Every structure is written in structure tokens, then in C-alpha cells.
Length: 422
Image 1: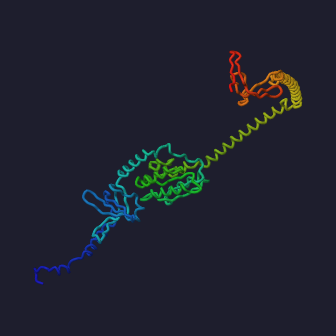
Image 2: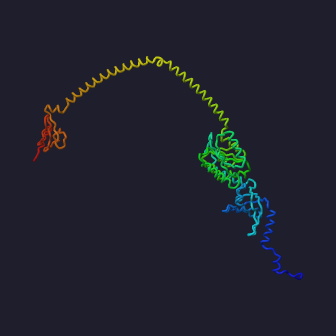
Image 3: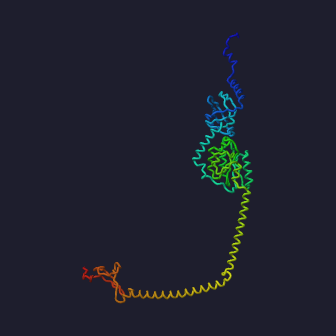
């Protein structure tokens, strides 16, 4: 080929790289240089896919970086990002050849500062407080002597050993039911709430439940500020004590729990009395009961002695003789009163009989009097107008009756006559 002659397209194609080759070189270059990178930005366009993967963008004033959080990584994140949150993420840059794009694959995510989290915390606190979830009136008392205690925490943290060590030294007779759960990272709040629900359904039932974990930053403790867990604690019918973080750490679970322990150890102290304290109390109670028993026995013995030396017991026959004499006198008096009452009743009965005899209608009839009644109505007739002419009457005599019909009735006071006309 002569110098200065332009290459033909066919010749250029022989020297050109394919799309796959260029993409492969870019992939090797980027992925080899950005295997361990921290990036800050604002979360935007966050989407959680049905597969569980999270797709989002990280942006600043002039650029946007597509990013992804694979489902298997979500559980280990300190906090799950949301739209608008300022975060600092760790991961690696990966190229996706089919689209010719690159993205940040995130394996760690933290809120940038605490401003965003504190804003969310204040908003949720205000809303739940308006609902009365933090009211003292809804809190339950811890049992004084619990026999079955539920413990919800991570089995890998120091909190579980701190709690159990303190509890066993103070109240070794209690049975502890461990309900293991993650206490940090995405999904931990849901897991804690699920463990709490299961603990509330155990048989035999628990007397109290402790929710504990060690200290950490606001981000580390964020699961205990999640609404799903706060509401689960509020709805528990079993008294709950919290022991989350250090004394200065206060979460929403601390506020809604029936009792707040400053630490896991402090929670164990609150939930059970100290064994020695209990033994001392029992010892003092035993001494007090023994003293009271001796005093009562002594007092009762004195009373029995006084009763035994009293006249009724010392000379019982005197009381019996006096009682017998009293009963005899009352019997004689009742007998006299009864005879008098019987005689009086007989006299009254004789008087009444004589009076009835004197006023008896039959007595009057025997003297020539009679009683006239209307044969139809059976009513007694004592006036002329009750028996107009034609009325059938019955006249009762001392011996027998007369049946007759009125022919004439006369009013003797006014000399009026009423005659029967056929």
C-alpha cells in the first residue's frame, strides 16, 4: 500500500475492537481499580424488587451512580436506606456488559451523620406519643417472684451472658426461655417482633420478657426504634423490661416497655430480687412470726387460766342448782297463767254462745215470727213495694214454709193499695 493512501473500511475493521472487547477492557479496568471504595451520596429512586434485591441511585449535585444491594447482603447492613437519606456506602464497582453500564454493588451502608435518623426518630416518637403508647397508665408491673422469664436477644453478643450471669446469681430458681433474634441490621426489627409474638404464645406462659442488647451507635440500635417492634412491645400482655445499649442510649422500645433497664445487667437486676435479700426477708419474717406465735400462746394460756378459776367452772353444781330452781319457778308460773287463761276463755265462749242463741233467727221464729222471701230471686222482703201483686213469695215459719202469691200490697204509712188485676 502506498504511503498516504487512506485505509478502506474493510481494513479499518480488521484493526478495530468489538463492543464486547471494549466492554471487557472497561470492565477489567474499572473493577480492578474500584474493588474497595467508600462513596457518599443521597439515596434516590429506591426500589425493592420481589426477589428481595434493592435497586437505588446515589447522587450528588452533578452525578448519579446506579447501585444495588443484593438480597443476601440486606441482613448484614447496619441500616436499610430510604429515599432522601444521606448515606456513606462501601462496595465495589461492577460493569454489566449486556447494558454497557456500571453500578456500585453495596455491602455496607451507614447514615451520613445522625441528622436523617434523628429526624425520623423525632417524627415517629411524636406520632406514637400522640397515640398514648408511652403513657405510664398503660404500663404493667413486673411480677415480684417470676418463675419463667423470656429472653429475646442475639446469642452471639455479650448481652446474653451479662443478663444470665446476673440473673442466675440473684434468682437461680427462675427458668429462662431464650428466644434468639438478630438485634442489628435490615430486618432485625421484624425478627425481634416475631420472636416477641412467639414468646407471648408459649405454654406454660411466661411471667415476664426481657429484650436486651449491647451498646452501639444510633445506627446500630436503630432496630429498636422501628415502628413494627415498638407496637409489638406495646401490644404484649406479658410485662416487658428492656435493657438496650448503655445508660445514655434511649430507644423507643425503652419508652414503650413496662420497665426500662439501663443495661442488660440492670434489666436482670430489675426483673428478679436478689436471693440473699429474699433469704434475709424470709428469716426476719420467720422471727416475727415466731415472736407473734409465742405472744399468742402466752395470752391464750392466761385466758384459759382465768376461765378455769372462775366460779362457773370452779363450782359448776351451784350454777346447775340455781338454774334448776329458776326453771321450776317459771314452770309453776306458766301453769298458773295457763289455768287462768283457759278459765277466762271458757267464760267468754259461754257468753258468746248465749248471745248468739238469743239473736238466732230460729229463736225468733219459734215466737211466731216469720221470714218472707221472693220465690224467684230468693231476696228477703221487708217492704210492700218489693212484692207487687202477682209476686210469688215463700214464708218460712218455725215449722215449715208457705208458698203463696200476692193479691194486694198496702203501704201502711201512706194507706196506698196495690191490687192484682187479672
